[in-house]
Length: 433
Ligand code: 4AD
Ligand code: MG
Image (cartoon, rainbow, N blue to C red; front, side):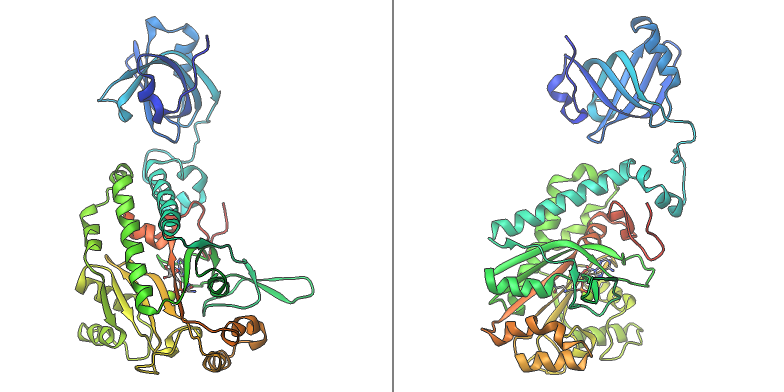
């Protein structure tokens, strides 16, 4: 009888029986009489033990040809072995080579520069730290859906090819038949607002595109954003939801991804701060605070990265900076009745210098004010007719926000640069692999 195939993560259910495990070689060593091969299959690590006197001669010979990342199938009996990586060992009786891996495999167990690693991203992704990051990403994506499903938000998919632009960021355009230029969506929000009027509470989760010429640790040209939009929420309701959402995401990773956080050497005590109420700091106070610590920011400017760092270092927990000046923010934000120079909005700054992870606001629901903002910004009003119509036919109080997935991963995992937080990063100077 041929033994069943098993994944490394499932070996606990096979202790004492014969299985075949397929995967890739990560280490080999031999004493001449006993040989060890460590392999990975994407679900874990397994050590296979070969005793020369007990395996067929071809199996012993094949062991001698194994190189890093050779793909193999190992057959043998599963033994519980707490000292082995992954907690199991395979008493190998048969070793088959599926695909050889020449000795020039690019990623060797030594230090490589990050550009080299990015050029070889296809292989870099196989290493333990990258595997851990992708698993945390996966956990967060699932947590997003679980959070909103439990609250009866409807997930909606919005177009990627658009005519109306949403943000003051760089645009990618492409010819669109006889319709002029189509822009890759910078945000799903404007469509989210239309959907909120149809469905009440919705969220989008999709790729967004910005032709950012900035080479920072926080900017990708293609990133994934979660954008909820809620009818009848004002800006305070909006921030309450964001706080619950971010807390849920962090707690979920702490609860289910301890193994991965360990691989990433994350000091998880730094994340305990999310259990406290988040700070809500008025923009004007934020400016005063930054100035008092040496920043040359003046009222009216957007906060720079150093200003953000001053603010979060002061509080050591997530901080909402609320009510920015109108001129620093996008056209769709609602004028603040208490101070019309400002808008009802908030950026959520993550601790540890991670910067803004959420941008959100209440939306301008007054037709005339919105039209005036569009005109003032020099935007082509005709492309926004449908968006203005949401204010003409049954306008409604509504709010929403956008959380950047990669920046959130970088914060939770303690990763310096967000390029590691997406499988194949798109940066100003990088379109491959
Ligand atoms: O603040 P932003 O530009 O807001 C919006 O796009 C709104 N339409 C959201 C909404 O209200 N529905 O972007 C939101 C978040 C940022 O806080 C950041 O986390 C992330 O998206 N982000 C980026 N992430 C990676 N690379 C970039 N170039 C990013 N630009 C924004
Ligand atoms: Mg923003």
